[in-house]
Amino acid sequence: MTFATIVALATENVAHTGNVQAETFIFGIIAFVVFLALGAVTMSYRNVANRHAHKADAYAKAHPVDLSQAGHGH
Image (cartoon, rainbow, N blue to C red; front, side):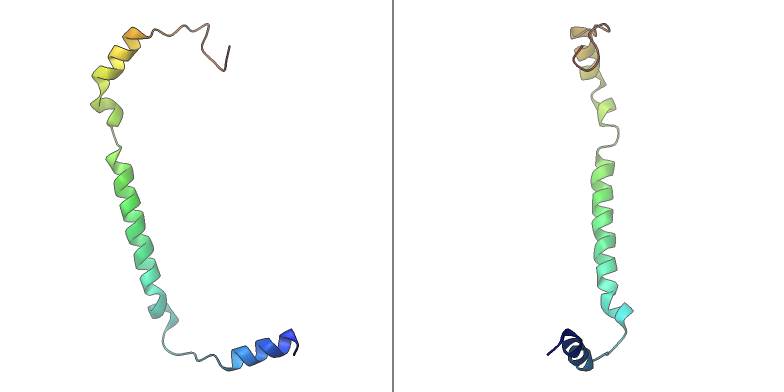
């Protein structure tokens, strides 16, 4: 059998029933829920730096930045 014959026989037996959009609607719902969950995780990290501003200020005072040494390995 050739490939074309196999494809023709395979497509002959396919039954097209129902509405394809209605059958696959659940995948859109699942994707929407996943994106909402990822958005909630992202939003939970908003303003984290400002919650610990006192720690950032203490670190900045304890570790002054030497601008001549700042950069990529200089």
